[in-house]
Image (cartoon, rainbow, N blue to C red; front, side, top):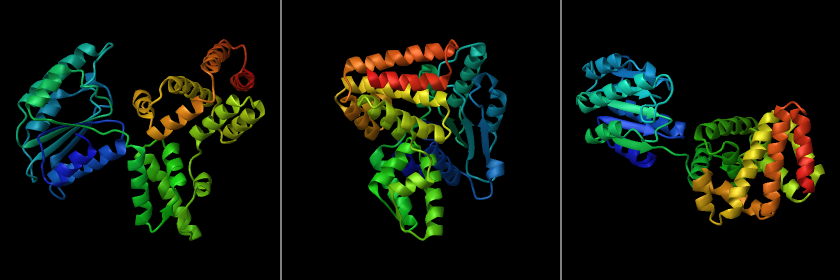
Length: 344
């Protein structure tokens, strides 16, 4: 089940006793949580009938006795009690010193799910859930649990969402401005919303009614991914001077040199993958990229030969090694890397 399906069911009052909500899009997950609270908990009864326990990715510390008590306690005012367990990591494989305790906690939670009373709605909210724990998942499914993976939304959906948000403020946004805004925030709706609020405040002051790319550049967070594309464009053209100018721009924004190195390394690795993959959709799925970014990568990869990309990748490895050995500082290493890469 995805966000739209689950949200529709909750809005229609179709409430299950057991949920596993997981994925990368935390803003949409939060919207679902609020919808569940509104649907299950009577107004004003949150302190009595709503229990939220955040395990903070430490499954070995899970207080199963307390959870069992909360689950089995009848609601005070609402028709059902809502117990929410966050970041339990029970649905992923455990390792390390706490594995034995985590396995024991998982078994107790599995037994609790099997005997879950009809007076309680139990919700697992996870950022990580590869569903590898078959015994727990089997108990979950036998009890009629609902699984919903909330993924980063595709570009078309995000652009539509941005347009609706702007129209609600009686504003318009240019398509290239919307795409740039989404890209700067890497598709994260919470981050996009924050940047939109900055734009709304600015336009409220200026009196303008349209969001342009120039305004996004002025008001919003820097377009670091776009700068990395510019950097590699300069390298592909053999223009070391242009590459150093883009680097100066990143440094002017106070971006840390290690972060720039990391972004460039990731970008070259993605270009290598893009060179051999002719379908943007497959590339997007394989590299966990949005289709818009995957298509840009494929187009840029054509400007390189596979030999040059491999040589740049090897050059980055050697630069990283020299920096870690203390043979040169990170900024000098990055500058030399750009000059050498452009000369290949």
